[in-house]
Length: 323
Ligand code: CP
Image (cartoon, rainbow, N blue to C red):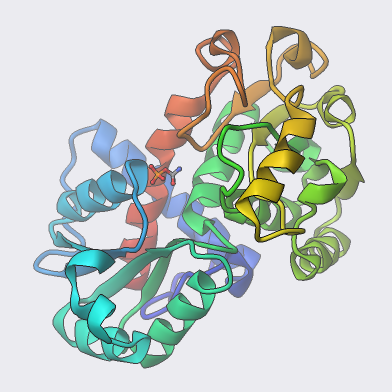
Protein backbone atom coordinates (compact mmCIF):
# COMPACT_ATOMS: atom_id res chain seq x y z
CA UNK A 1 0.00 0.00 0.00
CA UNK A 2 1.42 3.40 -1.00
CA UNK A 3 0.63 5.94 1.71
CA UNK A 4 2.93 8.88 0.99
CA UNK A 5 0.58 11.14 -0.96
CA UNK A 6 1.28 14.47 0.75
CA UNK A 7 1.31 17.39 -1.67
CA UNK A 8 -0.13 15.44 -4.60
CA UNK A 9 -2.70 16.97 -6.99
CA UNK A 10 -5.74 14.97 -8.09
CA UNK A 11 -6.86 16.28 -11.48
CA UNK A 12 -7.49 12.92 -13.17
CA UNK A 13 -7.25 9.46 -11.61
CA UNK A 14 -4.87 8.57 -14.44
CA UNK A 15 -2.20 10.57 -12.56
CA UNK A 16 -2.36 8.18 -9.59
CA UNK A 17 -1.26 4.54 -9.62
CA UNK A 18 -3.82 1.81 -8.92
CA UNK A 19 -2.05 1.18 -5.61
CA UNK A 20 -2.42 4.87 -4.67
CA UNK A 21 -6.09 4.84 -5.64
CA UNK A 22 -6.57 1.69 -3.53
CA UNK A 23 -5.06 3.58 -0.59
CA UNK A 24 -7.54 6.43 -1.11
CA UNK A 25 -10.47 3.99 -1.22
CA UNK A 26 -9.24 2.20 1.92
CA UNK A 27 -8.96 5.51 3.79
CA UNK A 28 -12.43 6.51 2.56
CA UNK A 29 -13.89 3.29 4.01
CA UNK A 30 -12.02 3.89 7.27
CA UNK A 31 -13.29 7.47 7.58
CA UNK A 32 -16.82 6.32 6.71
CA UNK A 33 -16.73 3.82 9.60
CA UNK A 34 -15.22 6.37 11.97
CA UNK A 35 -18.06 8.77 11.17
CA UNK A 36 -20.63 5.98 11.63
CA UNK A 37 -19.21 5.29 15.08
CA UNK A 38 -19.11 8.97 16.03
CA UNK A 39 -15.34 8.81 16.36
CA UNK A 40 -13.79 12.26 15.82
CA UNK A 41 -11.08 12.37 13.14
CA UNK A 42 -9.62 15.92 13.07
CA UNK A 43 -6.79 15.08 10.68
CA UNK A 44 -6.65 18.58 9.14
CA UNK A 45 -7.12 20.74 12.21
CA UNK A 46 -6.57 24.47 11.51
CA UNK A 47 -6.11 23.85 7.78
CA UNK A 48 -8.14 25.70 5.14
CA UNK A 49 -9.25 24.46 1.71
CA UNK A 50 -10.05 27.01 -1.00
CA UNK A 51 -13.10 25.92 -3.03
CA UNK A 52 -13.29 27.96 -6.25
CA UNK A 53 -16.39 27.46 -8.38
CA UNK A 54 -16.89 28.69 -11.96
CA UNK A 55 -20.12 26.68 -12.17
CA UNK A 56 -22.99 25.76 -9.85
CA UNK A 57 -22.99 22.75 -7.54
CA UNK A 58 -25.03 21.05 -4.84
CA UNK A 59 -23.25 17.81 -3.88
CA UNK A 60 -19.67 18.82 -4.60
CA UNK A 61 -19.80 22.04 -2.61
CA UNK A 62 -21.72 20.54 0.31
CA UNK A 63 -19.59 17.40 0.57
CA UNK A 64 -16.23 19.20 0.38
CA UNK A 65 -17.38 21.80 2.90
CA UNK A 66 -18.87 19.26 5.33
CA UNK A 67 -15.88 16.98 4.85
CA UNK A 68 -13.37 19.68 5.66
CA UNK A 69 -15.31 20.60 8.83
CA UNK A 70 -15.40 16.93 9.89
CA UNK A 71 -11.61 16.81 9.44
CA UNK A 72 -11.24 19.75 11.81
CA UNK A 73 -10.50 22.37 9.17
CA UNK A 74 -12.42 24.96 7.18
CA UNK A 75 -13.51 25.17 3.51
CA UNK A 76 -13.51 28.69 2.06
CA UNK A 77 -16.17 29.08 -0.65
CA UNK A 78 -15.36 31.35 -3.60
CA UNK A 79 -17.22 31.91 -6.87
CA UNK A 80 -15.40 33.22 -9.93
CA UNK A 81 -18.09 35.88 -10.54
CA UNK A 82 -17.55 37.51 -7.15
CA UNK A 83 -13.75 37.60 -7.34
CA UNK A 84 -11.36 39.68 -9.43
CA UNK A 85 -11.03 36.79 -11.90
CA UNK A 86 -13.46 38.66 -14.14
CA UNK A 87 -11.11 41.67 -13.93
CA UNK A 88 -7.91 39.85 -14.77
CA UNK A 89 -6.65 37.55 -11.98
CA UNK A 90 -4.82 34.87 -13.95
CA UNK A 91 -4.68 31.14 -13.20
CA UNK A 92 -1.04 31.56 -12.17
CA UNK A 93 -1.93 34.35 -9.73
CA UNK A 94 -4.81 32.34 -8.29
CA UNK A 95 -2.56 29.30 -7.79
CA UNK A 96 0.37 31.13 -6.30
CA UNK A 97 -1.57 33.55 -4.08
CA UNK A 98 -4.35 31.30 -2.77
CA UNK A 99 -1.74 28.55 -2.29
CA UNK A 100 -0.03 30.88 0.19
CA UNK A 101 -3.26 31.45 2.14
CA UNK A 102 -4.64 27.92 2.27
CA UNK A 103 -3.47 24.29 2.45
CA UNK A 104 -5.29 23.08 -0.67
CA UNK A 105 -7.15 24.40 -3.73
CA UNK A 106 -10.26 22.69 -5.07
CA UNK A 107 -11.63 24.01 -8.36
CA UNK A 108 -14.69 23.42 -10.58
CA UNK A 109 -14.42 24.83 -14.10
CA UNK A 110 -16.40 22.90 -16.73
CA UNK A 111 -16.03 25.32 -19.66
CA UNK A 112 -15.27 23.20 -22.72
CA UNK A 113 -11.64 23.56 -23.85
CA UNK A 114 -10.88 25.78 -20.83
CA UNK A 115 -11.55 23.99 -17.52
CA UNK A 116 -8.84 21.34 -17.53
CA UNK A 117 -6.21 23.78 -18.85
CA UNK A 118 -7.17 26.27 -16.12
CA UNK A 119 -6.90 23.74 -13.27
CA UNK A 120 -3.61 22.42 -14.63
CA UNK A 121 -2.20 25.96 -14.82
CA UNK A 122 -3.31 26.71 -11.25
CA UNK A 123 -1.67 23.47 -10.11
CA UNK A 124 1.65 24.45 -11.74
CA UNK A 125 1.69 27.71 -9.80
CA UNK A 126 0.40 26.43 -6.47
CA UNK A 127 2.63 25.16 -3.67
CA UNK A 128 -0.28 23.11 -2.25
CA UNK A 129 -2.38 20.21 -3.61
CA UNK A 130 -4.97 21.02 -6.30
CA UNK A 131 -8.13 18.90 -6.38
CA UNK A 132 -10.37 18.78 -9.44
CA UNK A 133 -14.01 19.32 -8.41
CA UNK A 134 -14.98 18.75 -12.10
CA UNK A 135 -13.56 20.15 -15.29
CA UNK A 136 -14.59 19.82 -18.93
CA UNK A 137 -12.73 16.49 -19.23
CA UNK A 138 -12.75 14.81 -15.81
CA UNK A 139 -14.79 14.45 -12.61
CA UNK A 140 -12.43 12.25 -10.59
CA UNK A 141 -14.18 12.41 -7.22
CA UNK A 142 -17.49 11.40 -8.78
CA UNK A 143 -15.80 8.38 -10.36
CA UNK A 144 -14.08 7.43 -7.08
CA UNK A 145 -17.39 7.65 -5.20
CA UNK A 146 -18.98 5.57 -7.96
CA UNK A 147 -16.31 2.87 -7.73
CA UNK A 148 -16.58 2.74 -3.93
CA UNK A 149 -20.36 2.35 -4.26
CA UNK A 150 -20.00 -0.43 -6.86
CA UNK A 151 -17.57 -2.29 -4.57
CA UNK A 152 -19.88 -1.89 -1.57
CA UNK A 153 -22.97 -3.07 -3.44
CA UNK A 154 -21.58 -5.66 -5.84
CA UNK A 155 -18.14 -6.74 -4.55
CA UNK A 156 -15.00 -7.27 -6.65
CA UNK A 157 -15.27 -4.94 -9.68
CA UNK A 158 -13.21 -7.36 -11.83
CA UNK A 159 -16.16 -9.72 -12.11
CA UNK A 160 -18.68 -7.08 -13.15
CA UNK A 161 -20.12 -5.68 -16.37
CA UNK A 162 -20.59 -1.91 -16.24
CA UNK A 163 -22.87 -0.19 -18.76
CA UNK A 164 -21.77 3.46 -19.12
CA UNK A 165 -24.49 4.86 -21.33
CA UNK A 166 -25.59 8.11 -22.87
CA UNK A 167 -29.14 9.09 -21.86
CA UNK A 168 -31.39 11.79 -23.27
CA UNK A 169 -31.88 15.06 -21.36
CA UNK A 170 -33.36 18.52 -21.81
CA UNK A 171 -29.94 20.19 -21.79
CA UNK A 172 -27.63 19.27 -24.66
CA UNK A 173 -24.53 20.94 -23.24
CA UNK A 174 -23.76 18.77 -20.21
CA UNK A 175 -20.05 17.99 -19.67
CA UNK A 176 -18.65 14.63 -20.75
CA UNK A 177 -16.46 14.53 -17.66
CA UNK A 178 -18.48 12.02 -15.60
CA UNK A 179 -18.56 9.42 -18.38
CA UNK A 180 -14.86 9.94 -19.16
CA UNK A 181 -13.67 9.68 -15.54
CA UNK A 182 -15.79 6.61 -14.82
CA UNK A 183 -14.56 4.93 -18.00
CA UNK A 184 -10.94 5.64 -17.06
CA UNK A 185 -11.29 4.44 -13.47
CA UNK A 186 -13.39 1.33 -14.19
CA UNK A 187 -10.89 0.15 -16.78
CA UNK A 188 -8.02 0.63 -14.27
CA UNK A 189 -9.84 -1.78 -11.94
CA UNK A 190 -10.36 -4.47 -14.57
CA UNK A 191 -14.12 -4.06 -15.05
CA UNK A 192 -15.88 -5.28 -18.18
CA UNK A 193 -17.01 -1.92 -19.53
CA UNK A 194 -19.59 -1.32 -22.22
CA UNK A 195 -19.77 2.25 -23.47
CA UNK A 196 -23.17 2.75 -25.12
CA UNK A 197 -23.63 5.99 -27.03
CA UNK A 198 -25.02 7.28 -30.32
CA UNK A 199 -22.30 8.05 -32.89
CA UNK A 200 -22.51 11.81 -32.24
CA UNK A 201 -21.79 11.28 -28.54
CA UNK A 202 -18.35 9.68 -28.82
CA UNK A 203 -15.91 10.52 -26.02
CA UNK A 204 -12.52 12.11 -26.61
CA UNK A 205 -10.12 9.98 -28.68
CA UNK A 206 -7.33 10.43 -26.14
CA UNK A 207 -9.58 9.20 -23.31
CA UNK A 208 -10.63 6.15 -25.37
CA UNK A 209 -6.96 5.42 -26.06
CA UNK A 210 -6.14 5.64 -22.34
CA UNK A 211 -9.12 3.44 -21.43
CA UNK A 212 -7.99 0.84 -23.99
CA UNK A 213 -4.49 0.86 -22.51
CA UNK A 214 -5.96 0.55 -18.97
CA UNK A 215 -7.90 -2.52 -20.10
CA UNK A 216 -4.78 -4.06 -21.61
CA UNK A 217 -2.87 -3.60 -18.34
CA UNK A 218 -5.65 -4.50 -15.87
CA UNK A 219 -7.57 -7.17 -17.79
CA UNK A 220 -11.31 -6.79 -18.24
CA UNK A 221 -12.89 -5.67 -21.51
CA UNK A 222 -13.93 -2.47 -23.25
CA UNK A 223 -16.66 -2.51 -25.90
CA UNK A 224 -18.32 0.42 -27.64
CA UNK A 225 -21.93 -0.14 -28.75
CA UNK A 226 -24.34 2.22 -30.49
CA UNK A 227 -27.70 1.10 -29.15
CA UNK A 228 -29.17 1.60 -25.69
CA UNK A 229 -30.29 -2.04 -25.47
CA UNK A 230 -26.83 -3.47 -26.25
CA UNK A 231 -25.39 -1.49 -23.35
CA UNK A 232 -28.01 -2.73 -20.91
CA UNK A 233 -28.05 -6.44 -21.84
CA UNK A 234 -27.13 -8.47 -18.73
CA UNK A 235 -25.20 -5.56 -17.12
CA UNK A 236 -24.46 -5.67 -13.38
CA UNK A 237 -24.27 -1.88 -13.13
CA UNK A 238 -26.34 0.53 -15.24
CA UNK A 239 -24.93 4.06 -15.31
CA UNK A 240 -26.84 6.16 -17.86
CA UNK A 241 -26.57 9.93 -18.07
CA UNK A 242 -26.55 12.66 -20.68
CA UNK A 243 -23.56 14.52 -22.05
CA UNK A 244 -22.99 16.99 -24.85
CA UNK A 245 -22.06 16.12 -28.44
CA UNK A 246 -18.44 16.96 -29.26
CA UNK A 247 -19.32 17.12 -32.96
CA UNK A 248 -20.76 20.65 -32.71
CA UNK A 249 -20.37 23.82 -30.64
CA UNK A 250 -23.78 25.13 -31.81
CA UNK A 251 -26.48 24.84 -29.12
CA UNK A 252 -29.22 24.58 -31.78
CA UNK A 253 -27.45 21.82 -33.69
CA UNK A 254 -26.71 20.05 -30.42
CA UNK A 255 -30.41 20.21 -29.52
CA UNK A 256 -31.35 18.77 -32.95
CA UNK A 257 -28.93 15.88 -32.44
CA UNK A 258 -30.22 15.23 -28.91
CA UNK A 259 -33.84 15.00 -30.10
CA UNK A 260 -32.92 11.98 -32.25
CA UNK A 261 -32.33 9.94 -29.09
CA UNK A 262 -35.29 10.62 -26.79
CA UNK A 263 -35.76 6.85 -26.37
CA UNK A 264 -32.41 6.60 -24.56
CA UNK A 265 -34.10 6.63 -21.13
CA UNK A 266 -33.86 4.07 -18.32
CA UNK A 267 -37.42 3.00 -17.48
CA UNK A 268 -38.53 -0.28 -15.90
CA UNK A 269 -38.78 -2.07 -19.25
CA UNK A 270 -35.26 -1.01 -20.24
CA UNK A 271 -33.78 -1.84 -16.82
CA UNK A 272 -35.28 -5.33 -17.11
CA UNK A 273 -32.74 -5.98 -19.90
CA UNK A 274 -29.92 -5.76 -17.35
CA UNK A 275 -29.09 -8.48 -14.82
CA UNK A 276 -32.04 -8.90 -12.39
CA UNK A 277 -29.69 -7.92 -9.51
CA UNK A 278 -28.29 -4.89 -11.38
CA UNK A 279 -27.89 -1.57 -9.62
CA UNK A 280 -28.89 1.73 -11.23
CA UNK A 281 -26.53 4.71 -10.79
CA UNK A 282 -26.60 8.41 -11.65
CA UNK A 283 -24.32 11.20 -10.34
CA UNK A 284 -27.26 13.63 -10.02
CA UNK A 285 -28.85 15.99 -10.75
CA UNK A 286 -30.93 13.78 -13.08
CA UNK A 287 -33.40 14.91 -15.72
CA UNK A 288 -36.29 12.85 -14.38
CA UNK A 289 -38.51 11.16 -16.97
CA UNK A 290 -36.03 12.06 -19.71
CA UNK A 291 -32.81 10.32 -18.60
CA UNK A 292 -34.57 8.01 -16.15
CA UNK A 293 -38.14 7.32 -15.04
CA UNK A 294 -39.22 8.18 -11.49
CA UNK A 295 -40.02 4.51 -11.04
CA UNK A 296 -36.39 3.51 -11.64
CA UNK A 297 -34.53 6.31 -9.85
CA UNK A 298 -36.81 5.94 -6.81
CA UNK A 299 -36.98 2.15 -7.12
CA UNK A 300 -35.24 -0.70 -5.28
CA UNK A 301 -32.35 -1.05 -7.76
CA UNK A 302 -31.34 2.62 -7.49
CA UNK A 303 -28.30 3.41 -5.32
CA UNK A 304 -28.10 7.13 -6.12
CA UNK A 305 -28.24 8.32 -2.50
CA UNK A 306 -25.48 5.99 -1.33
CA UNK A 307 -23.48 7.08 -4.38
CA UNK A 308 -23.95 10.75 -3.43
CA UNK A 309 -22.96 10.01 0.18
CA UNK A 310 -19.72 8.39 -0.93
CA UNK A 311 -18.60 11.70 -2.45
CA UNK A 312 -18.08 12.85 1.15
CA UNK A 313 -15.92 9.88 2.14
CA UNK A 314 -13.64 9.76 -0.92
CA UNK A 315 -13.06 13.51 -0.81
CA UNK A 316 -12.22 13.42 2.91
CA UNK A 317 -9.75 10.64 2.15
CA UNK A 318 -8.15 12.65 -0.65
CA UNK A 319 -7.89 15.76 1.50
CA UNK A 320 -6.49 13.85 4.51
CA UNK A 321 -3.90 12.09 2.34
CA UNK A 322 -2.77 15.04 0.20
CA UNK A 323 -3.12 18.05 2.51
N1 CP B 1 -22.62 15.03 -9.08
C1 CP B 1 -22.23 16.31 -8.86
O1 CP B 1 -21.08 16.68 -9.08
O2 CP B 1 -23.20 17.10 -8.31
P1 CP B 1 -23.13 18.68 -8.20
O3 CP B 1 -23.07 19.23 -9.61
O4 CP B 1 -24.40 19.08 -7.51
O5 CP B 1 -21.92 19.08 -7.43
